[in-house]
Length: 52
Image (cartoon, rainbow, N blue to C red; front, side, top):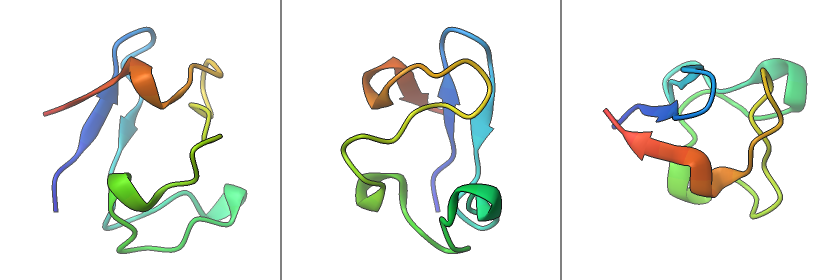
């Protein structure tokens, strides 16, 4: 699965890990994150992320 990085703070979304503290289970592709997903580190929205 593809990883995505926040261009504002460099936090990386790794779909193999998910974001358990936000209720996002492992193996959740970035495309399947809710539209209102915010970066847990800086609160940027999904548009701030790019594929790495």
